[in-house]
Length: 484
Image 1 (cartoon, one colour):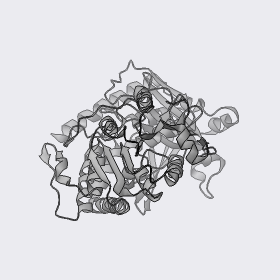
Image 2 (cartoon, one colour):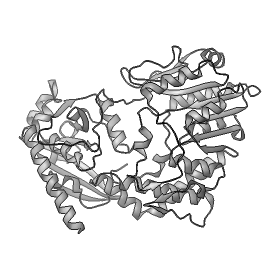
Image 3 (tube, rainbow, N blue to C red):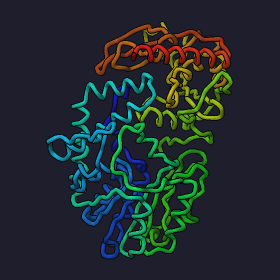
Image 4 (cartoon, rainbow, N blue to C red):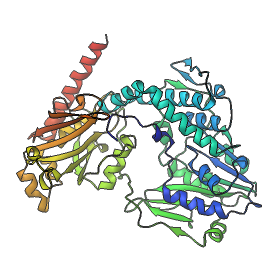
């Protein structure tokens, strides 16, 4: 999807993958119905696993679900036939008015308000501001899509129950029931969902009390706690070290060279009787995973004294951050990939390509002396447009030298700079203003296709950082003045 266009469907993308859901489907389809009459899912999210269970024959009427996010609170309250007003949702301290409309449209309105507030809380860079503009200009269309998705979930889960509740409290209510199966998909990062759904304090609701899940300790805590309980447990664990929380995981598939996704159960032997033994999914489509470096905090102070590095990285690593920061919007992978590291934090990603020189389009001789900048994208930050820093670093020939090695060195030596293409609703990509030259503009069904070009820059990294910080300071001052 072109940058700058919002996609409501991303809200309903769960954190379980296709292999995980396929394994769940196998277990659910063979689960003894006379023994397990109570389906309990904590941290239900977008109801992905519950939908798999329903498709496998588990009656939604025996399902009880819970979560602590407002997003799931809205979806769950609608799907379970609850009162949306009970959520007590406010925006900037004022109650969010629920429209006089069918329940699925009411829920869609609340999701839209929450979604828009989240996007507006992002840094003021072109990518996010374009998304906000698109959301506002096409509000009716976005709400209609949200309403359609909600109605589909509701139609497939008639009778399901939902309660805003801490996962540990819900587990405690079901753990001693021999007729219960408990499903969980805890977050991979501490406070991961809190950060994903952050609105900068603008949106509040009747949030239940809960403990923030810390995967570094709570995955193991969950496995140990349920080891001898009467209820049957299955939960999803994504682990960068490749070490499972239980000595006998019932399912696994790779997420990279070391990282693994596991399904953990408190009774592996019982699961194996249903599945025929432990299962492993191999030959997966390209999976992504982070490096060992932490992501830059959005309030981290970047100064002239900061240490900035550009380092070669695996495509799967770069794609992980790009998917995270680009809100799951698809983009072409880079052939030559790099990380921007600031003070030991991952702050951006860069992807180059050589197709413009090695396989140019017929007649497209204008750019055959320039390599392709597939993407340059920065992490969210409260003050700085880190995407511009990533772009400025990408425009350095010395940056490209780090990945154009071996046989590809000749391409870099023969190149004069970079070209890139942007798809946007606007006739200019403001994020490239002052960095690259607009070469062509063509109408596109969703706006414009913009082609940009720039020659290589010879600045060293400290000079690039100083220039970036000076321009950011001037930009913030001009915006502050314009708002007065």
